[in-house]
Each structure stands twice: as C-alpha cells, then as structure tokens.
Length: 396
Image 1 (cartoon, rainbow, N blue to C red):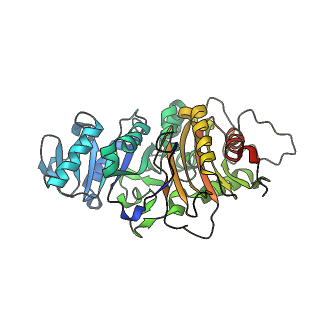
Image 2 (tube, rainbow, N blue to C red):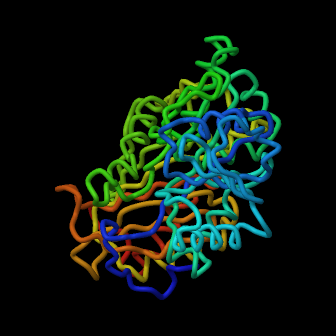
Image 3 (tube, rainbow, N blue to C red):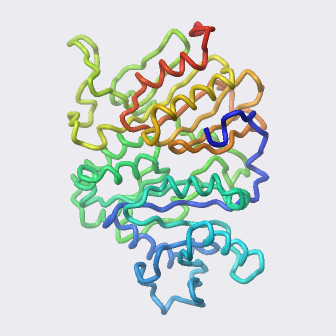
C-alpha cells in the first residue's frame, strides 16, 4: 500500500506545515462547474488564490476584469490568479510554485485545480500524494463536486462517474437551484446525503457561493492552526444517517459499532428483522448507480496492532481496488500513546501521521469508508481476521 506499508507513523504536526492547500474542483458535464468558476474568479474572497483550469476559452474570462495577462496566466482585479495547464499538472504546479518563489506572480495562499467533466478526481489526488516535489510543497485540502439541481438526478442515474464524484467529495455545490423546482432540489439533496453523509451541500444560484464555504476541508484547521479531527472526519454524520436509515444502532461483542448506510444487495432479512427497507430514501434498484455506494464508519474500542492494520488495508486494496473510493480515520494503535491519522483514495494513501495529542477524551479508533459494491459485511470480517489474527476478536 502506497505510503503506508512497512512504515511506522511519523510525527508530522499539521500546524507547522508550510505546504499550500489544494482543492480539486470536479463536476460532470453541464453540472455548472464553469459557471461556478466564473463567479469564483470575480469574487473578492478569492484574492491570494491560484486557479488552474483547462482552457481560458472554456471559462470565458471577462477581460474588463483582467488586471494583467501573460501566455498562460491571468491576474483578475479580484486578486485571483488564473492559469491554464501547460504540459501536465505536475509541470504546471511546479512552474506556478517557482514563479511564486521568484516573485514573478503575486503571492497566493491556496490553489484550486479544475478537472474535466469526465475526469476522475482520484488521479489528481494521487499526483499530489506521490510526486516528491509536489508533496513537499502542496497538500490536499479537499474535493469540491458540482451537481446540477435541475438535472443531477438524471446524471446520477445514467453516469456512474458523477456518482463517484459526489461520493469522494468533501463539499458538494448544488448548482442551478434558481431553475430547479423545490421538490427536485429536496429529492436530490436527500439522495446526495445518502451517497455521502458527511459532505456539506452548498446551494449556488447562478454560481454565487461564499468561497470560504468551499475550503479548509482538510485535517488542518487554519483558524486554530492545529489538526481538527472531528471536523475532518465528521463521524457523527454517519451516525445520524445510520439512525435515520435503520432507527437502531448495531453493536458487536468485539467492540465494533458501525454507523452508516450499508444495506447490502442480496442481504436478506425476515419480516421481524426490524429494518426499514425503505431506508427513508428509495427502493433499491440494481441499475441505479448510487445504490452501489456504501458510506459507513466503524468505531473500535480496543487498541489496534499497527502491522495488523497495515495487513488489513493491503488485503482490502487488493480485493477492492478501485471500488475502495475513500478511507479516512483516526487510530489508537498499541505502538503509540498518540493517535495516528490515515487517509486514502482508492489504492493510494497519504503517509500516516501521528498527532501531537488526542483531540478529546474519546480515544477509540474511528474509520470512515466510502466504497462501491464493497459493504461492511465484507470489510468487517476481513478486519477481524487480519487485525486481530490469532488473538481472535477481543471482548467488548
């Protein structure tokens, strides 16, 4: 497993990190991403921000608002720096950073990278994680996905990539709320909450949105200059979704408590099982792409052996592959009195980080999974087998 296998977590306090936060902006064709970009470029709240886009022509820059322009960079009156990708993203970000260091462009505090309409955001995230020069200068802040309130449900039905974009997002911007009916907007919001319970949904009419609502989605909180695990993990969102969907809490004798939306296809219950098979959402439809998405949080009371956890994740990656959309969590491991934070997208993981202190009195392990066709009924037995090994499941 990239950046995790064979590694002992290193103490890397986020508060002292000089790396620039990068937000990845994604959205399916026609989802309003270009309109959002146009509004952001003009917003004074985007001063000291660099936006990397595919083509100037696609965004349709208002040249009356352009303060300075070069071949592939435009400085807006708002103070926002806009540049196009030259070569590949690695070259563009390296060039942008060097120009910042040399004073050739105005200083900026964050970067937004646009993906194409059909693009999977995962490769960009992987690039930020794995390229040594970029990883030393930039850090992933979060994924922002645009979804069209008027036609989003149809896109989710027809395009599995649009479901994946929503599933891995840290922020979901619901565009075109000014033209969609209230009923369609409410239905889509309910559907998106089921796909990704922890992502705030931000309405945007005509692309108008407060930029600050889009950013600071990562582990590091710039206001407190320290890690904010509760805000980043949002474990309570999975608990709330679980209570809404099932109206009860599962508890396991080996100290696991699961929260989330994870009714498996093919899992059969009798009439007395106590489940509400409507789930407060919709009938399951095997042809509906978001019915294949699982979002849940596992809470483990006992301290974990680090090597056992690595074995588990390696096996899960080998088994799940691209269906393991996102994993993030805080671990209580036997080898350290301090918490360890892990974060992965598909088969790629950030280097594990040991925090300087526990964020609160609750020192249990909490692992959030967002997957496709890979439910908790598969993941939990694998966890028990490989994490606990010959010890067997510990008593609660």
